[in-house]
Image 1: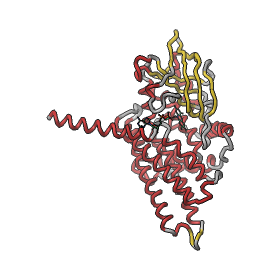
Image 2 (image 1 turned 60 degrees about the horizontal axis):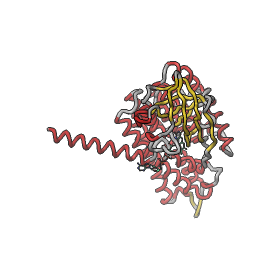
Image 3 (image 1 turned 30 degrees about the vertical axis):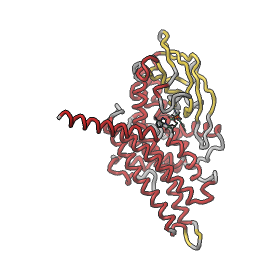
Image 4 (image 1 turned 180 degrees about the horizontal axis):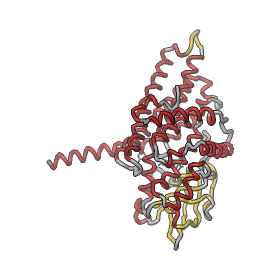
Length: 397
Ligand SMILES: Cc1cc2nc3c(=O)[nH]c(=O)nc-3n(C[C@H](O)[C@H](O)[C@H](O)COP(=O)(O)OP(=O)(O)OC[C@H]3O[C@@H](n4cnc5c(N)ncnc54)[C@H](O)[C@@H]3O)c2cc1C
């Protein structure tokens, strides 16, 4: 069984994707899967920077700039199966740089995108604040124009790569009176005066996370990405496009759990026969495989739609399908990984076992880049709007 498995979603892929899937599966197993799980947060941060270089040297970040979402999904599936930390490194290169790809000036693109692609610059995406999580529009960080600069003030929390990133793509209000229409996006170099890494927020799975603060942080106006007031739309467009890749990472973790569970069920004997011969175990394996197959179909359908829609992002169908894919795949992956642990028995909860690492890693996927509840609100909102429009059209005819 190969992760990713292009045969499972062939209808949504081009020939180049099939080739890429084989390449990243082999690379992931050889270069990433062989890295030991970091012992603590400091080691995770060092390993993340190492992985960045390894992926950059092999040019695996290229599909981010090329906006080939299906390729990004295949890469995230393979990396998540080999190492959820490596998946996070890839994910943040995409999240932190896509706003630049979509709306950056030539100068900002030139400064950061080649370095992102080569793994010489690590990206971060700073949206969440202590009082603005799901309700992004309520963010309180401000960016005040001062001559040819902006001055940023505020705090960002739960930021992946905080403390190790080379730049942060930051969302701040340039006009509080305008609410979400007053939010703008900035690329802030990590060494900008007034930007401070407050400290780490340590997860149970290896994943560099932390807080940053802006105290009169001065950046040239040229660091703004898109027009003033365009930040909210740009942030949502970025999340819309990349949501399918979070779902793909969930599939990668689920696929690895299924692989580990299957191998164990075939090898482990109890009551005189392999676990795989017990129907209660078979039922678990079957559910895991069915949910994984369904999740993959939703993921690659969403990515295919996004690739068809082109770079603009935010198209209605992409929003709906990406939300469906993220909600279903991340929830399914949680169930699949949990079943994997159960089949492994006691070995499945040993910190040294890959399935235990998956168990600790998969949980966050249901929370970041929009929780499951928020995805459900998006799906229901679209259903209701479509039904209302149909009803209004009937009323007018
Ligand atoms: C591992 C990890 C990495 C992250 N990396 C980043 C990053 O790099 N950059 C970044 O900006 N952020 C990042 N985040 C933050 C993440 O995006 C937020 O945690 C997420 O958006 C939820 O916000 P919150 O934690 O404040 O929860 P809240 O918004 O406070 O939500 C708490 C609970 O209430 C529910 N809820 C909220 N509103 C509603 C509603 N209207 N209806 C029903 N239920 C609702 C939520 O679904 C959730 O279950 C990361 C988080 C994690 C865990």
